[in-house]
Image 1 (cartoon, rainbow, N blue to C red):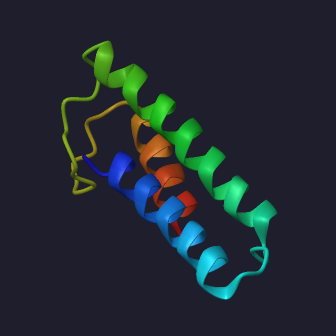
Image 2: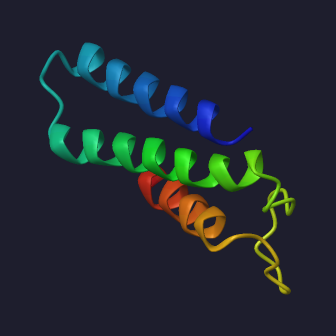
Length: 82
C-alpha cells in the first residue's frame, strides 16, 4: 500500500521535472539508488510476511514482534523514498 504509490510519485516527479525544465535530471544516480533501496526493502519485508512471521501490518510500535528482516526492509523503503 505504500511502495507502489511512492514509486509512481517518484517517477512522475522525475519525468515532469525533466519535461518542464527540458534538461536532464541532476542526481540520476541518487534517483536510481533510491529506487533500488525501495525494491530491496520491499523484497526483504515481503518474505517474512509471506512466511507468516510478520503479521504486524504497518506498525513500528513496541513490542516489535515481527521478523528483523521485515523491519529492516521497511526502513530501507522509507530511506529509499527520501
